[in-house]
Image 1 (cartoon, rainbow, N blue to C red):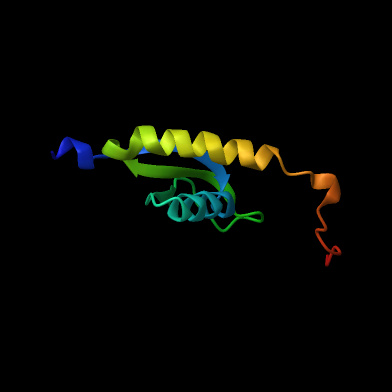
Image 2: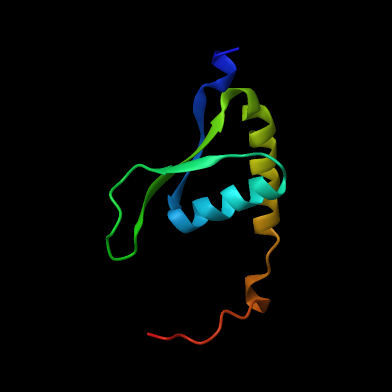
Length: 88
């Protein structure tokens, strides 16, 4: 069905880095998603809206994986993560 192959927006994130993390997570889970930057990049922090795109047929599975990803991110104890020394 052609409609099942339509591309839809699953969510939006603030940075390309976050989008790449989500794309990698989904790939590990066996579901292909893409990202598309919707604002100009190249600014000081290279931030802006980035859309995560998925096929319409995979939307429900992708939404469930996104919720799982969000929960996993909440479980990180940032007080115990070594981020290294500031290089600035």
